Length: 185
Image (cartoon, rainbow, N blue to C red):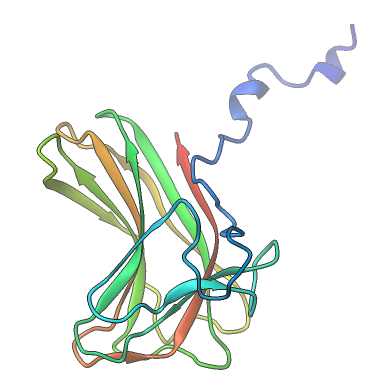
């Protein structure tokens, strides 16, 4: 047996963790432009500005476009619910870029959010990423992440969300989001 070929002890434990996000590349449906990505639920306070788009991509053939609603305090996003066990630890990430032809402006900002929900369907905690806004690059994709978020003692459900809020004065423009990853540590 070649001991050098076998690799270091414990290498199996350092293997990549499986991505628990369904449709992580937001590739389905492949049309029509503007349809909601499969396996994700959309929400909006006013106007829908979310849908798949072939105008940009981090990988694959398309991504999700999120356009501001141009309405003060408006909000929207996509969410995915997943059963969890207290004490588990999750990392949630995605790639984001500003739309070079229609950049975010005004008070619009987005973020990744994990809402921790208890058995009575009440939010008992929230984890958020660093927000993205008009200063987000339009030339390259940036990874946004919530790292090592621990499930609270009374939570039974995690609501993983990709949010865009128009803010106090309202926002304009749009961003692209792609390659979502949800990993249990």
